[in-house]
Amino acid sequence: MTGEAVNLCARVAGSAEPGEIRLTREVFQEMSTSYRLKCHSLGAAPLKGVRREVELFVLDWRDRVVFPTHIRVDETAEERALPNQDIISFGRLRQQDGALANDVVLTLPNAELALQISRWHFELRRFPDGFKLRPLSDGQTEVDGVAVAKNGQAVIKAGSKVRVGGVLTLGFFSAADKTLADSAAATRAVSSGSSTTQ
Image (tube, one colour):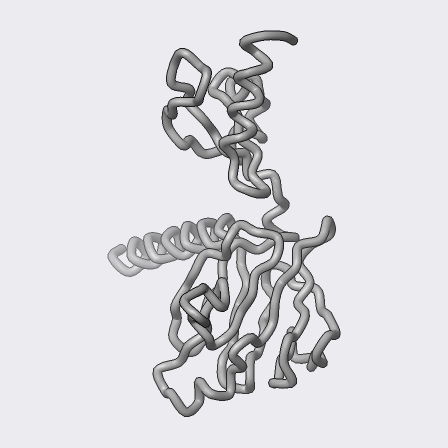
């Protein structure tokens, strides 16, 4: 592979965010159905040194059971996507000296209870076999009902529950799991509705 093809590959790879795998439409079309289902389109984009706009796709290569994609705060029912990065920090502090302090800011409507959450409470680190949680403070941190001491660690997967400061509970889940659950709930609702009308 030489010349224009090498340049195109380099530009596509260079356009990716950390941890992303980006593909052209041509590569996408050569993939099996199981891999195509893990891709989403970013649309066409100009790439430096390439004469045409290139349609780009992102391959979601991570196992969604091993690597959850979202959190849900049980106390507020708020759901958030996890940042797509290898280290994700969680805590009460939003900013320090004008810079982002935590990737995921943990808050509660009750300001006094929120003080039980440390400014920097814990972080997730991505390993080949999944996320590992490491507490950054002496504040209470439990994973699936087991206390984790500062500088200890615990595995986090889809379905894990993290209790923060005794006042806030985070559920970790995969967007794929949520889509399936929502679909199943909708099917049950339709079935229930049709059975009551008969």
